[in-house]
Length: 290
Figure 1 (tube, rainbow, N blue to C red):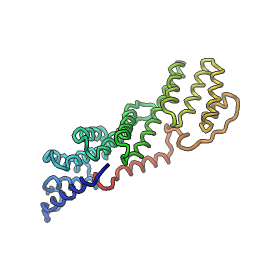
Figure 2 (cartoon, rainbow, N blue to C red):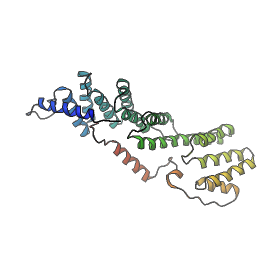
Figure 3 (cartoon, rainbow, N blue to C red):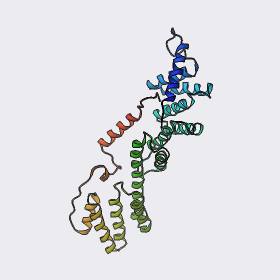
Figure 4 (tube, one colour):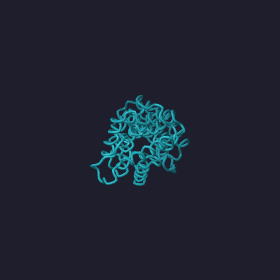
């Protein structure tokens, strides 16, 4: 999918720019000449973590040389500098502008990935608004649909699963709110939505148990009993199998299966460290300065 053609153009232009640099000049007061020189200096600033300075040079390149062969890469670079500064709204806007101006460019999957990742980084806790979580889900799904062979696919699938898990947890939270308010049809609707729309994410045991709680609260004891038995039979590794057993007066020992049996509502220290490592890996790209 992706070729080395743009890298060859970059190297050629950078070589030409090097010929025009003043050998006696040191420091930032003497800017490189030409489009490749601007790109070269921006790349150096980016690698040093000087994102605002890199962005200034890239913007100068785009303003002075709008038809440059480096324009698409420069636009991606601007988006990446915003992303590294955690200015996610600005990063998303810049990547979207890139897609509008360069819809067939070879690095479009990168833009789609970072658009989704910017929303992913803005996801709120389960008890808050999940607009950004939904945007992240849509973004990762778009990437995997339009560019299924993208090298970003493994990370996109992992982030997509986490974002969908959070949306499923949100449905459970809202359903539990309705259950406490004795609004049983609304509560059951949310729990059934988790079973139907968020299957395979480790939330089914809790959703089914809460459906049993709805039936129990409504006085439908036989339905409640049947639902609790389903929790034990179908999701024996869920901690809610233990709760279902208590409702039935039987002892059940849960056997958690790791990540699928854990809730993301209270991440462990190990999970937080894993997230930090994932963040670090995403800042490193091989083969391109941005």
